[in-house]
Length: 327
Image 1 (spheres, rainbow, N blue to C red):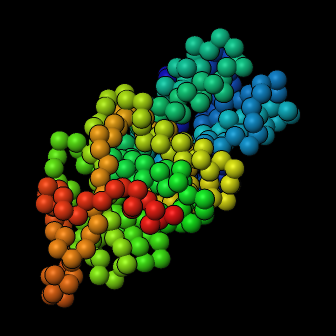
Image 2 (tube, rainbow, N blue to C red):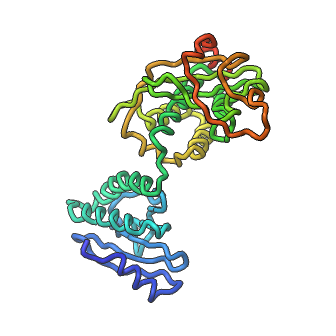
Image 3 (cartoon, one colour):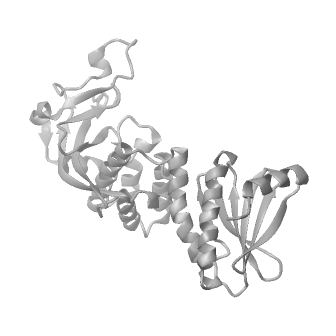
């Protein structure tokens, strides 16, 4: 892009004060605008569309400091408006716009402009998330995949979807991933070759105040470009809830609490998972765990430790027993 966007925005800030301002330039016959929203100092880039170009006027995309929407322009024309609200991302925002303009320069028909925008947004949304450090780590993705696999199993076995979705309590900060009255299940996903699991606190396997507590362990392999991705698992559960919009909304809210805002699951398709085994253990007296009762010292807390799963074999039960407790 020959236009110096940073210089334009700097000059607009000096000259416009609290007013919104924009200036135009042409990209291979496509009218574009570079602007600044005075009240918020947000940076703006617009692509003007002729009235003959079909695009949903409710079109809205958001990703990590960027919002894209369609605004009515003069006459019957429309503007695809791209707004940067986080000025710390201005350098990567400019790279995004340069890539977008390169796409516009190669477009053979103005009717393909919405497609070009969607393609560029799909790529750069993930890049912005990585820059901001807002994508889940590979370890957290693996853990969430295990939780959602268990949730999907519950939905397939349950006749009460409301109870099942509500039971996924980990996103609300519960000590265990799934709770139902006085029963609970903690789900761990471990690399298939690793014979141990990490326990996050002395409360996670605290069983004395519960009627039943199960530890479910899923041994998984990670496969580059594998088909069974976190994205696919999320879509699978949404399919199971497709006829219940209120429950779908609740599921989406829970995903947002664990770090995947609505629509952001598309970023989690780089690698897939293969579940090698699913095992369940009843946590009870004698189970190898550290709890508040076993530590017996109020000054010690936030204890993290590992459990060798070979020591848990005497407590193994069919995983269906854990599932039946939650439905």
